[in-house]
Amino acid sequence: MEEPKYRIRALHTGRTITVYQAYRPEIGRAAARDGRFPAVWKRDRMTWIKPSFLWMMYRSGWGTKEGQETVLAVEITREGFEWALRNACLSHYKRGFHTDQASWKRQLRQSPARVQWDPERDPHLRPLPYRSLQLGLAGEATRRYADEWTVSVTDVTALAHEAHALVRAGDLEAAGRLLPREEPYPEPEGLLDHLRHQAPATPKLKSPVPSIP
Image (tube, rainbow, N blue to C red; front, side, top):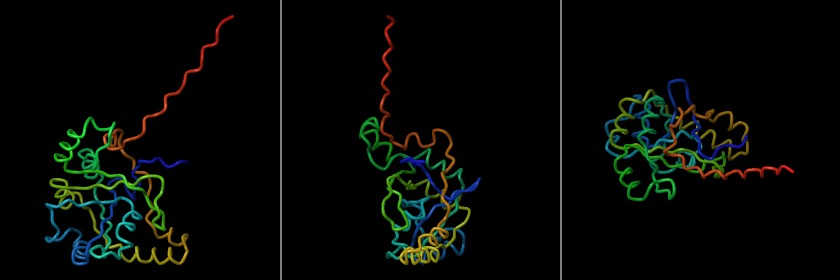
């Protein structure tokens, strides 16, 4: 089946969804050790969470970029994740989807979360024709993420490095067995309507009514 252009794919349970972030070791290791973000983690700054493991690998260079050496799998409540989506707006203006640019800017200032859709990645980190959701949290959403929604924090840096080594060796089958099994997220009806700008459907032409002789 053809993959829809805009869909959330993630590792999830009936109660939680796993998202990924990457930090410098003093933050990432402390968060994994304590199961919560340390005091040096700024709750007044925007933080971006990503349900796609491979998109996180693209962003962090498989956990090798400076300041992103520790890759975290953060399990959060689906209730919190969906609250953020319902209160989010798109991070960029889309003509024909938003009423006008001024109203979009006003919504952007007022929203505690924002969404952007970036090309999903394959194991070689090449872009795919469908999109992966990135969710930016600010203000109230950041505080809720850190203090209410987080269920567990796991350091998956070793997993990232092992999978990367297998990809570089050309063993994609073995790498695939290591990667998280991300499935379509069972989104409630209407959850992404204000965030998913689909092209308008092409109207079907009506068949002409045959004339009666």
